[in-house]
Amino acid sequence: MIKMTDLYMLFCSIIMKSDAEELMPRLLPVETCGIETGEDVNLNEPPRNPQEYLRQVQLEASLCPDVVVAKIDPKKLRKKQTVNVSLMGCQAAPQGFSPSLKWQRQQVSNFSEIRRSISKHRLHWSGQALDDNVLMPKQDAEEQWKKFCLGENVYLNSPPTDHVTEDPGLDYVKVGFPPFLSIVSRLNQATVSAVLEYLINWFEEREFVPQLGRWQYALLACLEKPLLPEAHSLIRQLARRSSEVRTNLEHQEDERLSPLNLMICLVARYFDQNDLADKED
Image (cartoon, rainbow, N blue to C red):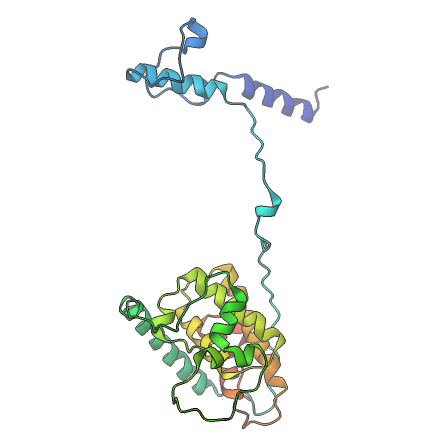
């Protein structure tokens, strides 16, 4: 009695030994390769005519092994090969801390208009000259991007100096560069996602600051839809962390409440993560 495994092996052997022409009919009449006719085919010399070119291709194909195993260097693989999208929702807002549906709809409308304006004028703003002190980091320079966006005072957790200098201009190195349109319009989608990830990683371990909110808003405004899986996971992480910080606020007059609500609102209402949305009290 023939087992199913025997039939499978027999089938595989028939397929492997069958003539290639039975599986893939010829589209052009090609003479038999020189290996079978005894005719020499030199692969080191350029073909002198179409027939000789086709013979060389046929010979090269016959020299290829039936099975090829790729040699992959694990060190060259990216560290993050799997995207984990958590379905965990946001923490519910304390009583009186949740925004109204009317407020949320208005924020989504404003945000949508800003996105359209950025998309329409991206080429114009990307062509604007940057000041000499604006040195944008490379895409993979995570720590430099944190300093660039948040400023050294926040990044190093050092209090700002209170003394007034004669120069009325801001020291952006200390306080962070705002997300000027001339800056964010230069960022491609890979850089937008990367910088957003860097700032969210920073936010996971620290408190909310105004510089962070401005950059998060600007990067979300530059994030193209439909979202890639990595971006989908990032914005959900942002909303959850915003809700976590919000639960620790002591009073409704806290200046962080509105931007935290805004981050949750945009992720849930604009980017269609409806399970994260705030409900009216």
